Length: 136
Image 1 (cartoon, rainbow, N blue to C red):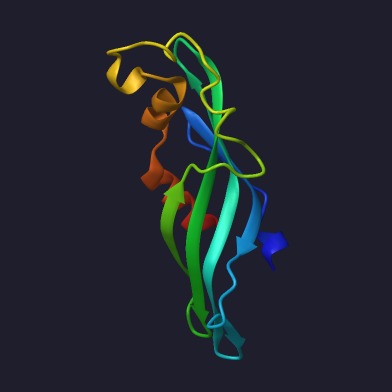
Image 2: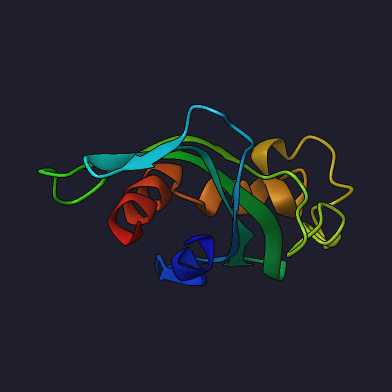
């Protein structure tokens, strides 16, 4: 089932997201029966990429934590994107994110103190959550 979910590619204009793998947390209360299914702890992992002005193309990891449920009469499935984080994963590391650039050592630059900070300013997390709900 998890292999059917990925890859997912989303183009959001100023940034793009590629979710390449799916994982499922070990939970004993997940279930599948004739009346539907529930998956808690579904993880989608990949990277987000954007062209940061003055720095160039930058990437950083992205991870979504979701719960998915679908009753027999429900269409489509209900998807709750509980968390979006930017912790290292197998598709992108924190070290790759930012990659230096003219803002990496800038003091007093506020949100532009690093390329990864600038990238974070470009990403619309709510749009990513909505997109993930639609894709799943």
